[in-house]
Length: 500
Ligand SMILES: Nc1ncnc2c1ncn2[C@@H]1O[C@H](COP(=O)(O)OP(=O)(O)OP(=O)(O)O)[C@@H](O)[C@H]1O
Ligand SMILES: [Mg+2]
Image 1 (cartoon, rainbow, N blue to C red):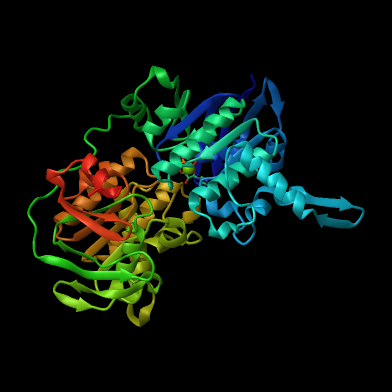
Image 2 (image 1 turned 30 degrees about the vertical axis):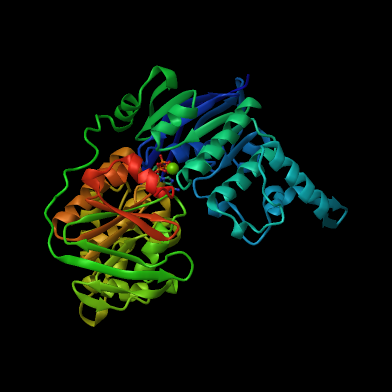
C-alpha cells in the first residue's frame, strides 16, 4: 500500500487565500471523495497535487518521502495523474483518439531526426483502451466524440503513464446515468489494479455508491475526514455548508397569468420534430428527458442559436415573433442560460462585472453610448451579493472563479436583462447543494414576478421539485405533458425512456 500525503498546504492568489493549512491523505487501492461547496478549494488542492502551481507552501509526501512537485511533469513522474474539470481544454480536437492518448510518447529521437511510428501508436493506444475495457476507434477524431468518450480518452491517457494516483475532478457532471455507470466500472477496475482514486463530485449519492473515504472542505480548509460507511449524506452536507440545508425547494406559486410564450410545431435541422408548448406568466414549465433526448437542441432552437430553427411558430405575449438568431430572441424578450457555460454562457477572459452587463449594455450606456462604469459596478456588486458569487472583487476575471461560481455568473447576467421568458438548460450542473437552493429560490422569485420559465433538466428530482407542469421529450418529440403535482419520478422516467 502506498500513501500520498499533503501537509499544511497553503496557497494564495491576488485577493484570495484559496488553501489554508490543508492536510490531506489518500491510499492506493482506495476511492477517496473530496467534497465541498463551490469555491471551497477542491480543484485548487488537486491542482497543487498535480503540479499546476509552484507558489504553494507546505509538503507533499509519498510513503513518508518528500516529493518536489512544482510542475505537471514532476507530478506525473511521481505517478500522480489528473483529469481536469473542463475536459475540452485538455484535448486536441482535430487529432485522433490514439494521438490524444499517446501525445508525445510516440515521438522517436535519433540524433537530430524525429519521427512518429503510427502503427505502433495505434496499437499501443488500443491496448491501453482494452486494458480498461473500453472500445473506442483509435482513428476517430476527438472532435467527433461525445463528452463521455472524451473523458475516457483522458483517463486512458492518464493510465497510459505510470499511474499510482488518479484525480478525477467532477467527472460525472456532464454524463448521463448510463455513462456514469460506465465510468464507475472503469474506476472500480482501476481500484482493483491498486490505483488510488481521488473523486470530486457534487452528487452525494454517487460518492456513497463508489467511495471508501471522504474528505470535506470548507473555505480553503479541511473540516472533516471519515470513512463513508461511518457517515450519512445529511451529515456531509452539514459539514460542507457549516449549517443544515433544510428544505431544498421553495414554495411554488399556483396561480398564473396570461400565456406569455406559445410555441407551435418547432422543428430544427436535426433533432426537434414538431414541438408545441405554452408557458403562462408565473409558471415554471419543465422539459424532462434523458441526456440526448433533445432538451438542449430545443432550448437553442427556441433561442435562435446556430440558425437551428427550420419550422414552427413562436408567439410572445400573443404576438408572432421572428427568432432567427439570439439577437432577435433577446429583443423579443427571451433569455437563455445555456448548458455548456464555459463555451457559451460566459466570457472567461473578461471580468465578472463585464460578464454581468454584457447582455444588456443598453441599460448601462450614457449619452453618446459611453458605458456607465459606475452603474455597471453597482449592479454587479448587487448581483454578486444576491447570488452569493464567491469572488475577491467584481473586477476578477471569470476564469479565476471556481466552476460553480462561473455558473452563477452565467445565470446572473440574464437577471439584469429583464426578459419575459427565461430558459434554463441544466442550470445546476456542477453547482453545490447550497448554491442549488439559491438558484431554485431565484427561479421561483422570477416566476413570482410574472416571468414565464422553462426549466430543462435530466434530473427527475429537480423537475419534481421546481416545476408546475412538465413536457417529456423523447428522441426530439414531446411524448407527454403532465401536471407536476399529479405525477412522480417513476412516471417521468417511464415516459423519458420511451414508455407508452
Ligand atoms: N488562478 C486563480 N486566481 C485567482 N483565484 C483563484 C484561482 N484559482 C482558484 N481561485 C479561487 O480559489 C477559490 C477556490 O477555487 P476552486 O476552484 O479550488 O474551488 P472548488 O472547490 O473546486 O469549487 P467548484 O465546486 O465550484 O469547482 C475560489 O475562490 C477561486 O475563485
Ligand atoms: Mg472545482
